Figure 1 (cartoon, rainbow, N blue to C red):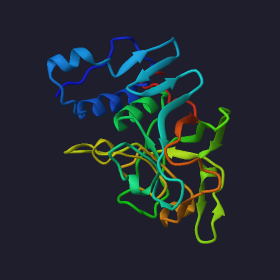
Figure 2 (cartoon, rainbow, N blue to C red):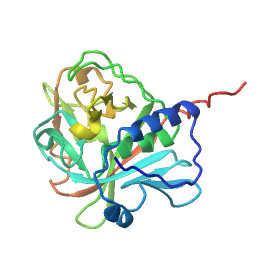
Figure 3 (tube, rainbow, N blue to C red):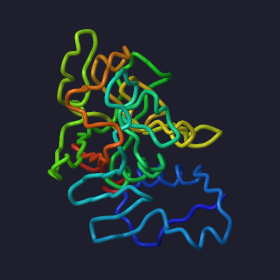
Amino acid sequence: MICWIDSTPMQYCASAFSVLCLCISFCVCPVNAQTRKQLPPPVERITDSVVRVGNVLVDTQERTVTCPGAINMDNGPVEYLAVGPKGKLHESLLRLDIRPIHLQVALLLLGLEPRNVLRFQGDPRTPQGPPVELFIRWRDAAGKTQEYRAEDLLMEMPGQRPTSHGPWVFTGSRILKEGFEADLSHSLIAVWHDPAAILDNPRPAGASNAYVVHSRRTPRRGTKIELVIRALSAPAPRGGTS
């Protein structure tokens, strides 16, 4: 196993840093020494408040995480808002071109504390965790930037009802003996509850697998997008303070 991170000091809260170290300890990076020399470090400081984790951009001042990707489905039922390139692409609105553990680390860098209470896919429990807003951004045929809340590209069944606006939650994926579960499944953001995913949908319909793509609003499959995750809660307090 080879994993590396730059030595630039980061502002972690103590508990988030512990989770970060645990995640990295399970990170599988199958590269030899020569390949390692050719790759950038997973965490790279861009400015005082902006760092890059793999392909994921973190802005600690704006409290956002930005991921590149593409529209993966422009119609039909979905179980995920987003998966990685090797995830369940037949049931996900978005494909994000990132490594799952990099998204988990990026959210930890904002000082968010995950809380995964889900036991299995479709678990009727309401997922828990710090609230975030999700926005999908792309350029239309005229080159004009379009941005919608993620909920606006989904509809609920039966009846194709608009999905209510509101937060999603950072549950965090699980660490199994085989490794970091989201890295194994490439599940990133679940619409239908999934403990393997990193973010989940707390709306009541999230337990019933009742979502379809809003085809009249969603751009065509293959359209390049950015997913912007905006934290709504303050960073968790640091441990060890009086």
